[in-house]
Image 1 (cartoon, rainbow, N blue to C red):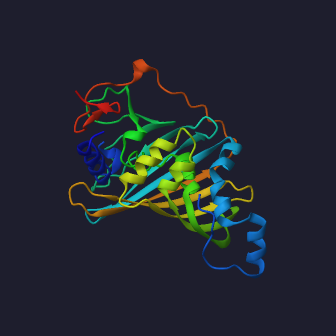
Image 2: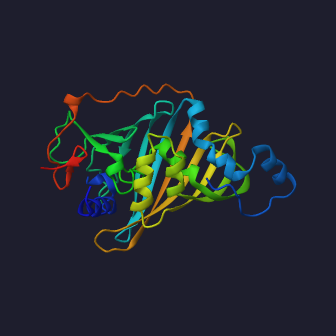
Image 3: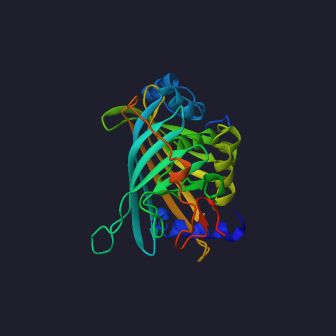
Length: 289
């Protein structure tokens, strides 16, 4: 994708994404007393977070809910998603709900997203796309690696960002939806994450490392006693293509019901739309002709 298309992708996210369409040293407060014993049980914070994606693969599958918040034009906008994810096959399905219009009436049908290694498939994508067709986007061609463009962060990609954790501190025990968890706060580097990511996720994270305003990703991670992510909040920063100012996006992923069935089937080639999408510079992830 050329620089013009990258700028277009940035503007698309500012317009509310899909509405468009290993460091080894931990830093932070030194725990004491009961907290120190708990950290010892959980291990070094940076090392624990580096393993989080692999731990999810071991868990097999789960249900997921996502939310993405951004402030644009003085208005805070939230996009929500819900679905399932198969961590071993790296396949997920989310139903993404776009914000209501200013009158409080929803004008947008929910978008179905299929998440796959290197690709994002969307149905109900937007103007000009037949209702029974899917749009395919190659995630490595997106300036953010699809960490924010789709309106929902791929749960496994979010976990792989933690492979780039450079500093982290343990903040104690709490609960997420009634499940006891350990709370960690730190900063990851997308460039480092790309180097240590799985082969399927490396290109997308490498794109994000250069496409965002900063490769640094502050985060809060909540892991259960098995080391599985239960909640992950990450803060990304990208440059608005028109105003050239940095825009902050907060992505929150909740994972639960581990082992839940996650039968995700990708569309056949004949079901993928290859035409031009209204207001978009690409179609099906490829340059429009």
